[in-house]
Image (cartoon, rainbow, N blue to C red; front, side, top):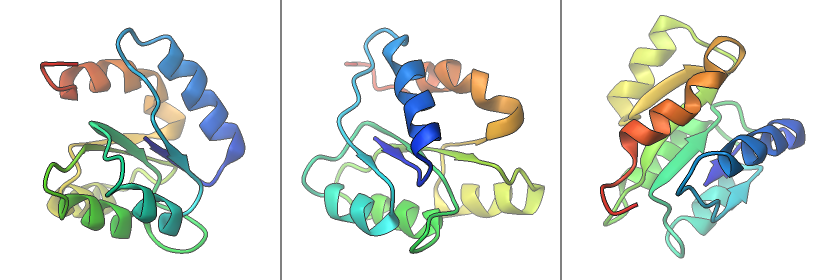
Length: 119
């Protein structure tokens, strides 16, 4: 699942994910509300989550995901790679934290490291 308010970023992520063997995009959302509504009905194995969303913080989506019976692994992908923010996301349950500008290309390896054994 991709959660990012930028149409261009979602397009880039879809293109990148098509190149990762065994990865299938099941959902995407441009707002925190849309993501939170989708999560219970079709929880993904992995969620790529932006922090700055137009209606709320990605941290709210992360917290909602953590309450699911089978929570997804969460990769924070943000423009804001501050150490304090990185620590805050880890404390809230993020499995990985990547900065869009400098670590975008690491996404396939991070997905591979986080993907469930059965994937």
